[in-house]
Length: 305
Image (cartoon, rainbow, N blue to C red; front, side, top):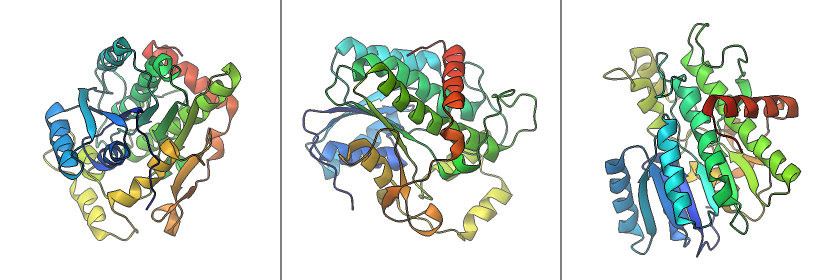
């Protein structure tokens, strides 16, 4: 297992920290000495997760704050609250996301839900927290992507999937490709502008979390029968959350992680196993496309870096 280095005196923000990889990241970061802000949409779930972590690590410094990445006003309120305190932010972990929403739904600001929650919300949060990050000695932003980014396509003429037939899987893949492009572009901007900030990305392979059921259940009492059947076949290798969080933790804390790097499991099909360098799809290595997506995100969110 990956050992997180000593983080005493560091401040970290982890989104989606009430469950899955976010909760595990918060647990292990706090166990290494960091003060961790658990950024969650539902405070009661966050408090429950905090209690579970404290039961294992009584000295952990954990704080619950609400942020809804599907609501730009909530993102601003969260960022303003942290900024008002003025404490340098050492680490931002953009972990939260939603997957495979069965029908086209929208955020509070009218964006397609997966693109809005998985990319535009984290983009706005990152941009708003940049001033706080840049006051830290060695700040990092680590963004969770997905293996689906490998077949994702940015639909430039229809980013919100308003004119084409909605595909839960393809929309999710677009959003996770966008996350990878965000990480690479932020690394490029850091170099270009002389920031001392490291931006990189990770993916969890096939890690068993509630992500596989929460999204497909939105707007329904339960996931579709077909989804439930396919999910029950278990024909793909999968792993527990402790292992699946390791690429994220490595990217966020390892002295060997690199700016613009991408990390994931290196076992069967890239779905399980120990952490290694992951291949970045060429669509996330196109500087013009990355810059264009960044500009589009600034226009859509009204937030600039």
